[in-house]
Each structure stands twice: as C-alpha cells, then as structure tokens.
Image (cartoon, rainbow, N blue to C red):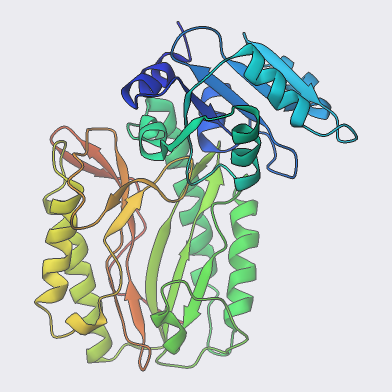
Length: 362
C-alpha cells in the first residue's frame, strides 16, 4: 500500500504538483514519528507522481532513515546552512506549484522554497491536508479515549481537594501533576484554571487569587496520550451556588444537549452550532455569548472541523468534535461545559464521561 497515496490525491485535487509537510500532526500521521520544530528546516515533499523527497538536518538523518523513507533525502549541517539542500531538492524534483500547511509552515521555510524554486506558486492547502485526519480510525479513537480517561481521573482527584483559600495556581499545579501521575505523555495545552470573574475570560491564566465561598471555578484542560489530545471543561461552584449561578449553568447545559441532539453522520458543523447558539440566544443572557460551539479534536487540540455557523462542512462518522457552549460576564463569572463527541452513523457517542450535573466543591 502506498502510504503517500492520499497526499498525492490531495495535491492533485488542489491543482498543484505536490504537497509539502513540515513537523507537526500531519507529519506524524504520515511517518509515525515527530521531529522537533526549531531553527532547522525539515520538510517532506510528496508529488502527484513519482517518489517523495525530503530535506533533513544532518543530525536527524539517522532517525529519519530508520523510518524507511523511500525517496531522496537532502541533508544539511548547521555550519553550511540549508540553501544548498533546497537547491538540490529543486533540481531533483522540479515543481511549478506546491500546497503547504498554512497554519504550520513557518515563513522562513516558505521563503527557502520560493528562493530555490524560481516562480513557484505556493498555495495554502491546510484544510485539504489536515482534512485527511478528519475521520478517526479505531486506533485513533482508542488513543483519544485513553487521553480522556487520564484527564477525567486527574480532574476527579483534584476537585476532591479543592477548598476555600486555595489559589488558582495551586489547583493548576495539582492538575498538571495528577495528569502525569495517571499516565499522561504530556499536556494537550496549558490548563485553564479560573475562578470568580476570571472564569469569564475564555482563555484565562491562573492567578494567585484565593478561592472564596460562592465562587465559580472553571477548569479547561486535557492530557495527551499516544499522540492524541483530550479537551475537557467543567465548571463547578465553591461552597454553594446561587439561584442565578444555577440558572446560567442550566442554560449552558441545555445548549450542550441541544447540540448533541442534532449530532449524527451527515449533519453540518453549521447545524450543530445553530442548535447550540439558539438555546443561548433565547436565554436571558444572549449578551454573554462569546464563542462558537467547538472544534475538531485529535492529534491537535484544535483541528478540523470548526463547529460554527456558516461552516457547512458535512461531518462523517468518525469525526470527533468538542461541544463547549459557554456564557461569560466579566463583572460576574463565566460558565463553560465541554464534552468530546464522536459522530456515529446513527448519532453520537460521548467520549467524555465526567459528570455534568451542577457540582459544589469545597
């Protein structure tokens, strides 16, 4: 089987001679191993026809060769620079057009290609290239599920310890340690641990703020395992929840459930987001809406599809997305609840199992 076949097909569909991959999620999916992103350009070029080729720093050459790459490899050393390697690639593999990962390729690599290939037409093929990861395999789902279970175990352990007087930073540190203690390979992203008015900032940073009774506490985080990311948010209340907090929480919960109710293979990202946002818009707090419903989840914590109105992309069975409605008021508090959802032929399966009922801690 030609492991490059779907990349060749994508290049052809984009109307280009080839696709270029740099270290990142697509590179790992293709080669089974990642390489660091640094000042050293690393590149695989997959043409529509013919053998692929690569540019590789000499210090990574042995590691790359062990991956049984079938094409030519042009290596270079720091003391010599990489221009000659790019020139050799251009001589070996003539191209007039190339699709690249617009969200991943760095500008200096783009410029090195443009310098080596005079007149080369370079287009952003991000959606087509990363879209090859849209439908998850059985092994992908298994790795995602493991990352989620690790995350949920860590969250349960940490919430059991939350008390009035603890700081956001203390909770964050405990959450990070708990993820590794439960078997994480790493973190999918830096955790968001935010209390009181800080919880109304969708991408808040932990502070030295000490929890008080009546605070809202929002935790958004995820472990990484086997190259896949979890992404979970739960909002809890410290000591007690007021009727107002409970009403906002219930609205967000209802919005999440509305998104699940329309989820099935063949639905569009627009339809899911519209169902979610309609609940929030009809609530007493439409002015507190800030974010779309969610995003795809897999090797990257944010990837295709982006679940928002206007995106009429059809979601096939095997898609995993985050359903994470929220309401935010920086004068009071924010509430977000987030599940990781697998789209199936007849509906969906929740990969997250952590309770979503209103919870009081401390």
